[in-house]
Image: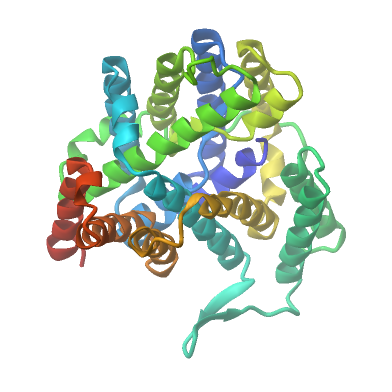
Length: 406
């Protein structure tokens, strides 16, 4: 999970946030969320700002839509509060079951493709082109070559089942970058904790600015993606750790979901995008982690990392690109759960995945998918299989396209 300490500040810096402050917020969100999960829910699951949602925060909300990052943090905060209320009431688990599995899988896969594209674009491996929209970058540029080296190395490490392959790939890429002069050498390894005052509390101060239709879409997207990301991770890690009971139920699931919601809320106050359970936690369960003690140890290690901020200077887009690409590959694997032989199912999945990349927006990809799901399932005479909530969301997204999106 350590790669998030470098990737998250690099992505949110694009939104105009201070990189050092986001680094501290990332650490604090991980520590608080993971401790809560370990001590309150007693699960070997670690939390930190999630991949995909940080990209949505930086490139869509703050970038394409021009929403100030302070207001975007307020949106994250509100989504966390709503999560806590729904979890405490027991409604959250019911809503999970209302959304068809095909949409859950296609959203995850689409986000994977989206963040891989972002990684390649930020490293200038892929560049804009007037004739073809996008094209290969300058393969004679040192930074581009460094990114390609990092991607190849990281892919090889993962293919060889090397523990911590993503993190090792970033470290080696950074070292090679410094040795070749592509990346400047840092001033030190251990340093003072960066000032977090520029981001701390902005989510609370800017709450009055969230009352717009556009922010409603932002909050719904934060809500939706985190909703299923955490649920999927909880199932995966609990299964890996052998914690699922005879009735195929996950003990203390409500507590685990509440810990995730509390982490999102606290993380927004510190100054970072949505905090969520990391599926990488399964690696801890695989080697024996069965209780919250595993999470507590991870939280302590994240806490220690707060003193290593000088190393952020060597984490350029060429170094983070391999992490984004590898995580993207793993997330895209969810397409295997989609029944592509059923056209009414394949169509919304296809548009969800494709439109996330082509519109440069996770939210709009989700919107296209939900609208097409309602249409194709109705035409295929399977309307009774569609929950009324799905039709309501489809209508809401159509109204968004018609009156909000410009």
